[in-house]
Amino acid sequence: MNAMNDGQHGVTMEELAQNELAGVGACTTAAVPGIAQLGLYLLVFMAISWAMMFFIPTAFLFTVILPASFYLLYSLVVFSPLVSGGWPFAPPLGSWRPGQSCLKPGLATTALLVAASIAGPLFTTTIYPRFPLFPVGFWWGIILFTVTLWYSMVWNGWPLNQKCSPAVRGIGGGLIILLITALLWQLVNLSDTPVAGAPYDPAGPFQAEWFFGLLVWIIVWIQAFSNVLTFQQWPFYKLGQPWGQVANTVMCIVLGWLCWTISLKFMSPTFSFAAVAGSIIGMQNFHGAIFGYYPFLKYKQPKRGICNFLTEIALAFVWIALLRVLMQPIAAKVQAAGLPFDINVVSVLYTLHFIALLTLIHNFYFLRAPLPPSGPPPAPE
Image (tube, rainbow, N blue to C red; front, side, top):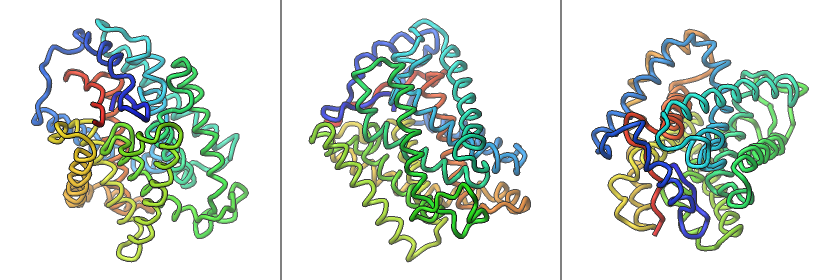
């Protein structure tokens, strides 16, 4: 997940990224990690994430840190190779150079992400739209996260990428995402929530909690047809820009809406969007960003994508069963605190706001040290 597609022929930054990362001798001298090492890598981050959720004071975690973490996810992607090319500190287009310590891009970019996760919520709670961080920050945050992934994984940072400097791509792309988020916020209404009728209620056509579930399901398909995961934008890259992105966007929205509305006939809302959709998103991320499409890298698209997707769905249901056990102590603390999160929601926050977030920060900015950094994904065909 360390490069981007040009929407036509796969990875456009592959040679540059490989040249930059080839010199990471100062960070690691290990051989290419095997599947067992990568599995251990995931287990380490699972343990760190579980400990953070268990030991951070529950009310502070769920009412402050987690709604603010949507800005951490947003800035993680904006300053990654997917949008800014790693600018300002990380490879391939940031200030880091082979031979320098991995701590340089890691610590500097992490500080930048933390600053964004503080500044963003301060802006939205005090300037615009001026809503309370909890619970409204979750409904705003899912729009921000969806638009971020859509802009980076479907539109490839178009039209700024490949035409502008890394700084313009990062800052300009970040502003584009925020503007679209503010526009989509007008579609939300806060009826049937504890803050219904508040002055900051946009009074749009879609109820906030229903819209939340819809967007999570749309993210499933954004990642499925993304430039770096599962199908790697097959077959949409064959259409060129911007028609491939338009078709991809329409497909993601339609499939997301169908999955959300049909699933509600058979399961509870939180099991649908949090347990099922959230686990599929997590498995797409882990399978692509950590395990590099193992063992289907040898195939071309669409065979690679079909095998990836079926594997990710199967793993998602294994993950749901596993988290039913792992999340019990944390869910009990949440219930004792009187917070409105069931085990399904606790599980998806653990998967995406902790494990995925920490592993991607480590992959992008600490260059996966002490393991060798992962290279750009291969071209689809």
